[in-house]
Image: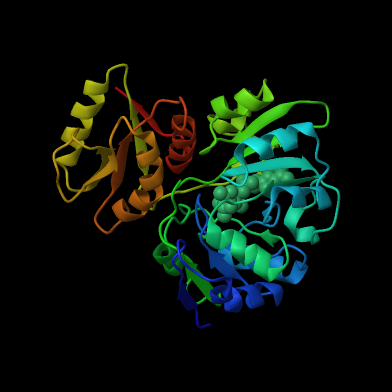
Length: 344
Ligand code: TXA
Ligand code: MG
């Protein structure tokens, strides 16, 4: 299949420029599109055959449900049973990098929810994503636009690498500004609020609006054998480079830096680290400034893809602190490393 590559300047475009991808979506085809978190692989959430194509293109197991993307927060009421907590979250953080799981009311194709009694809803803030949803005239079901198990895509080139030839259209709207997938919070009818996946909207920010928010065990721990986690996706291998990633932890930052410096001397190792901690070398990749975790978040997936090249047999990175967006970083890195931690 020929993949149309459509460049759109998110700061200066007319909605007509999205005619082709909007018609593809409305006609049951797949389109990869930019969002502020990561690129999405979209299909009409109302068309079961189209949604099934998403699972096929990614190689995604059919038990793993999809998020629906809406153009304005109020549209959630059509598909989900919302309450005051949703309205408070919408007021504070939407449109933006937040997904809310609520009881499912009905109205979308069966493959979207994969048989669950809940539905995940998100209103992205990226102008191209919102314009595409509006113009297509349907809610868009979309997972991250990567092959299942690989790091999520934060540029259109990464999407082309994973899905080129398999889908009819990729919209290039520049690199994602957050770089990690949306925060997912589940609002249960009994009043419980549960963080299923940390992201750009931090736990601290959620607690500021909702009060109590529990953190799902799956956020920082591997699933227990036979467990059925709240988010089916947590069972799966994620973000995994071909070379194994090891996370380095110590009570002292200097010890971690020293370990990484030594590791970098072996050219079969790749090292992901903070600027200034290890001297530049072809196998050293800088996540950003240690004080700016947002930068680190933005770069992580791209660096995982870059460092995963021929001749590299191991990848080392420091385990980040778990405060603020650090919790999201830690969650993604633990999964990318299959929970391998090197204590020094
Ligand atoms: O930032 C994002 O959320 C991106 C962009 C494209 O919007 N999308 C994304 O989708 O990350 P995906 O499919 O890669 O991750 C969605 C996660 C999966 O782990 C899935 O299991 C979980 O959300 N999920 C979806 N519906 C759910 C539900 N009803 N209850 C619990 N978890 C759900
Ligand atoms: Mg994903």
